[in-house]
Image (cartoon, rainbow, N blue to C red):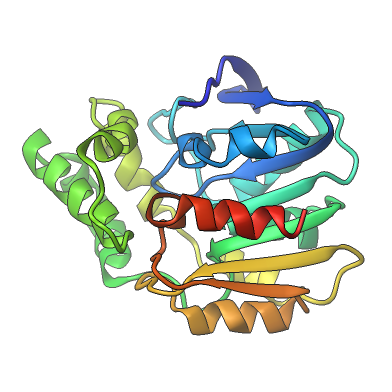
Length: 269
């Protein structure tokens, strides 16, 4: 498990973060509904040659969750910009998965962060995006937030397993579920979904172009959340230097094929 013992306050909200290793910086940005722990099998190996930073997005993991909290995609890219400044980093490499990929893309194309390299893993990045489930939660958020605990747990389990190609171990499901399991975490889970705004994708996608740093795209080819064709389209839009397919992995590449993900990252560092 990764240690997130440090705290940064972004617009008054507490953000949990940690780091390990020495060398040129790499920032790992997780997606939803995961946490920085998604990188637990990857970060220690990257840290053998780099200084690795990781954090829980606002409203997720060990970071602050609060009623009426704004947790949409623009908030998360603003947070990334603030953390890069707080850490005093100049052109770090950034790795973004899922909505972390969108935060990283917005971080450059909207917020203006300069990267050394950008690595995108099954990133939320282009339209169409979203699902009937997301739309349903957005319409009936209070009803979902009021689900009995057993129903919430069952829904979460089904959702997270649908993101993976291989059956997830029980301890992995519990690790990801714990931050969303109590009286604060349960409504926070549905709040994140309800505040999903495709306008934040539209804003970034209009700006995608070639960059002065290399972009590498890695994709779990069995992803049923974001098909591989969208990954290839993203590659073309940002003029990525490489596209690495991971055959026997779905959206949650970290759990399906952590060694393959690590290899894809390390060959492009």
